[in-house]
Image 1 (tube, rainbow, N blue to C red):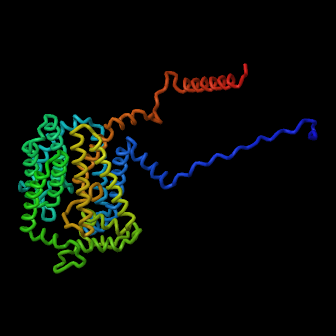
Image 2 (cartoon, rainbow, N blue to C red):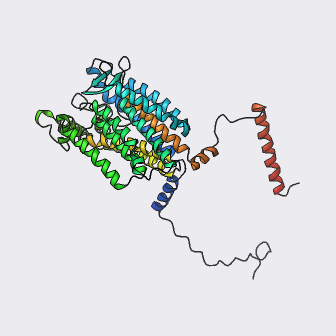
Length: 453
């Protein structure tokens, strides 16, 4: 073999073996599903869903209250931002309540159950006292607290029933008493019926329905047998049917389900114009502030029918976003209730989730024409400080319970704050010296590993 130009023998080429088969590529959709599932199963998922979802709903609600209430305020010779400023004040107070509730230990929540239900019963009875109670839209459910501010005690009755009912059932479960039906029903059902009676004295059928849903949610979580559950449901349904039959106004609302025409005497005016608002919004809406129905055509545009204005201005995309946020909030609440071992946390989280989910379903169902108009606001979204304050406190409860899970507590303890870290006694000078020493140590280690002396 001839030598190379340099006089050295040519290099021998290595013989290549057969190529190893490449591993099959995983389906991108399967990879995306796996990543989403892993992210969904993280310990802090429920915590972030509750905190982020409630914050987004509240902020979007403030925007829509400002947009939907301007015309109403101007018609009343008030500034255009009148209702928005009141809602913003309520949201600021509610944020303080949410933060306080999220930092309270479970024992303190249980200790507050009895004072809250006692205060709620007292205020709900005070509503019926002449000269103190105020009637709004035919319902005597309000108390004037000075100036333009009104308080609706029945909204706080929902929070009271959740906390007190959860504490009662937790105590009975610890004593192994929930296997007997009389301990499961007494005194939970009589106290709930007392609250329902005080609410119905004022004529507020919508709030009574939400309170009934909370009662059924607590009984279901407590493991009520089917025959007992059906019995209570039958009694409540019979009472509701009697109340509807004896009220022409409620009968008219029931007849407006699925209506497409205002009907004789415009009895279905509100339901039909809610459908008009949703239908005219299209996919992306007519634009924020560009609603036509809020110009006097749609009653209660900033309270009970704010979802219709949202559909008109933000379109199908906006309404689906609101639905997705409520669905995420409901899932997170169910997850907190299902993963805890504390019976009080399970009952309270389940009660709050039932409350918010049932109220959202009833409000949105009425706007869509699928349910009768019950006159309940959309939680965290509609105008009304009396509804916003207890709801934000309840969200704080869920946040506290989500943080108290063992896995979530461990994950939060491992997180290091980015700002405000503790420094040594030497301050910034000590920090620079520490960084310089670490740099010198890394260089020395690199020199020894490369064979230098």
